Length: 326
Image (cartoon, rainbow, N blue to C red; front, side, top):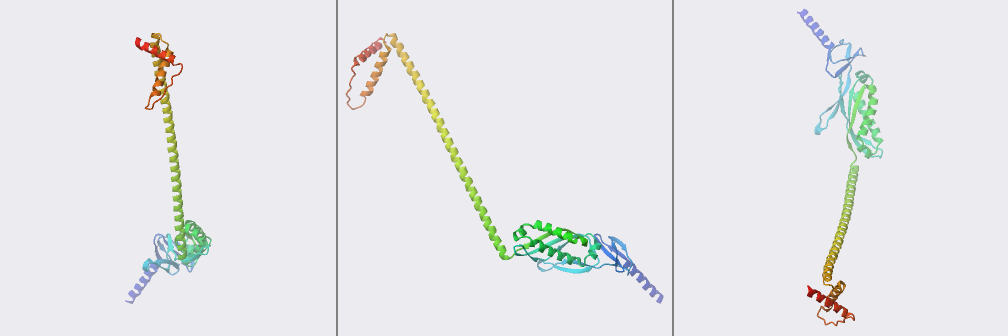
């Protein structure tokens, strides 16, 4: 019975030793193994064998954010032997920084990094999460201290790129690669926010007034151009109307002259056929028309005949003979 007990104890010890010497490492994780307190190897993902009680995984610090009330998480720092090789994100709490124009502002940042050399991350720095947090905070203060508040609010990409470059250079010796840095919230003091809102409102009003003035200017220009074109069109129409009227009057005069010439020619032919002087005939006709216009009207008029009226009367006799002959 005692022999069986001893054999069972020995078997149990063998199983414990074997289990202590077998290490299964998940994918994207690793462990740093020390042999008698000195670095020995870095375990690869999968099945690994170590010497029990001689080889021992190195204990490191890790940082985790646990859920809290009102959506706020709490940071918990613990110890572990597993090194996560995936990209990790640290959400740092808000901190107060002072800009170049002496404005105190609260800023919180996100840091994305990845451990690329597990050995350096264990032996080159103690408490890597705390070191990264403090380095990020001090670097953020230095960068923001070189900028004014307006530049801080409008230059997030520039600040992110500058912080990434500074942190990547500083953490390179720790075996850490900083992929990017993002500023989440930039909260200036309440008095500054009120002043900024007033400034933005004034700027919007100024832009609105400029747009209204530009609109009125364009409206006046278009209205004056329209009046100008209207006057030009009116003048052009009057010009064309005057030209057409003048052409019409000239044409009418030509037609009247032609008609008068035809009438004179007919009279001349008729007078010639009756062997009468055409000039005497025409003079008599004009004289009669003149007398008619003089005697028109209701008022009594005294008509004085010229001394040479006898020659005109002789012309009238000539006309009488002409009509008698016709």
